[in-house]
Length: 248
Image (cartoon, rainbow, N blue to C red; front, side, top):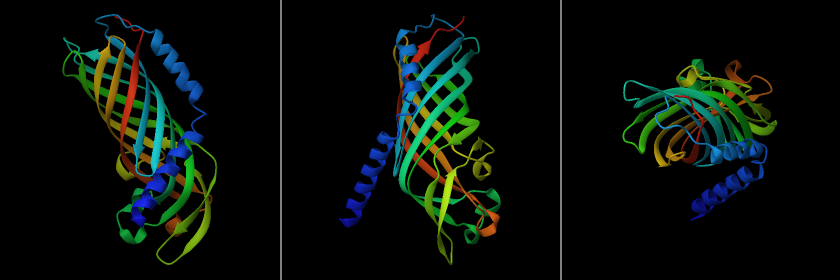
């Protein structure tokens, strides 16, 4: 029972922290919303542009994002859509462990250390790739993944934990993000596997699974000459998308 209460308290703290620190991107999200409400896309358009607002939650970590996406319909029937866009995201968590990030160190348990941060909020802006397949007139299956960008946020106090020691440290979000596959990745990156349901002509909703990397960089190097630590979080997400004017 004590463990259950602890988990519930942690989730409540995460939600409060997320709501408290979500004001910075609100102007961006509101702009996307206003654009989407007024937009209509021509029937049969090869180019499709979307504005999207998403909310995600995983244990100990909540996030929200606003994004702009442009895709092209490929093939004679234009059932396959490929494109990319720009995603502005906020992530807020509490009492999370960040483990050694560089791929050169993650292969052996003996070279993996961790950093514990009690409460944090990070912001990121990334270019992303999107691919979708039109199963029916109302249903798409899709996947997207961040490619490159940058992150920012305030410095946070934490605890560096290794096999033989614990010491207080300070860290900040790793400033640059780049997809290099697996543990070679650098920075904060998100990917989504989803189903898109076309609710109306210019409005659709998405839901699915999100896999989020959040990374902090300590102010100095510690064991194995390392200063980068990563949290990997899988969670569910929902979003609403608005079709914007496109070209035939």
